[in-house]
Amino acid sequence: MIGGSMMEYDNNVIQYGMTSPFDTESPETKTIDGALSKAKTEFSPLEKSGINSYFKRGKEPHRFSTLQDINQSISKAFHQNGLITRHQIIVLKKGDECQNALKTTIKHIESGEFISSIIGMENTDNPQATGSQITYYRRYNLLSLLDIEPDDEDDANLPSGRKGTEAQNIQNKKPSRTYEVFDVAGEVCKTFTDWGSFHKAIQPIDKYSHSDVWKTKQLQMLQDVSKWSQREKSKVDDKTAKNLDKLNDAVKKLITEIEK
Image (cartoon, rainbow, N blue to C red; front, top):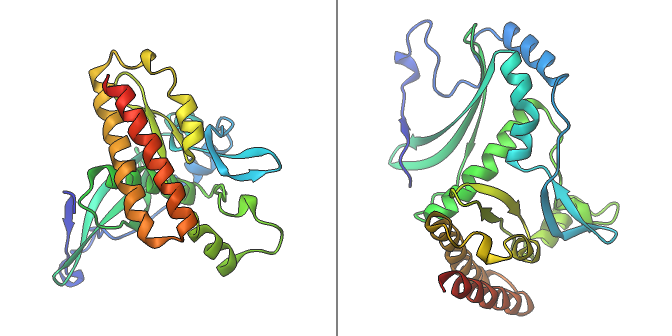
C-alpha cells in the first residue's frame, strides 16, 4: 500500500454544494464539454512510439500510443482551451480493507467544471510495480475520458473471430510487462512491451552510464523485471517458464554491464 489521500466518507454528512471525492463529474459540465469538444479538433496527430513485438500484423510489431505520446498530442490544445489534467493516488477504504486507486481528472480552469475517472489498482509493496501500474492506468484513464479508441494489443495478433474468453486465455499464456528506458535525468523516455526492442533501445550503454541517476533508475527497473520473471514462473507452463528463465539470464547480464 502506498501513501495517498484516505477516502472514507459518509454520504449523509456531505453538505449541499460540496462534491464527493467519488464524483466522476461536476454538477454542471456544459462549459467543460464545449471546451473539450473544441480541444479534440485541435489535437496533434497521435503518435505510436510504443512497440509490442509479441503481437504482430504480418511481420511488423504492433505499435501503440504511450502516455507520453498522448500528452504530446493533447497538451497544446488543452492549454489553448483552458483545460488541465491531474492524476492522484487515493486510498479507497471499505471496512478494514484498503485499496489504492488512481483518479484522473480533466478540469476547466475558469469554470471549475471537471470530469474524472477512478480505477482500482492492485495492492503491492513493490514500488517499481506500483509505478508501472500508475503509468498504465494514467494512460487508460486519459483514453477513456477523451473517448479515444485504445490500442488493443491483445487482439492485434488474433485471427478474425477469436475474441472474448478465448482471446483472454491466449493472453494469459504469455506473461507480459513494460520495460522502461530512462534518460540521463532519470525520466522515462521510451516504453516497450518486449525485451528485444527494449534491449536495442538501451544500447550502447556508454551513452547513459556516465549518469548515476540513470544507473539507479535503470537498475531498479531491471531488478524488478528479474523478480517478476521468477514470480510468474509458478503461473505458467514449462515452456513459458523456460523462456522466463532466459529472460532473467538476459536481465542479469545487462545488470552486470551497467554496474561495470
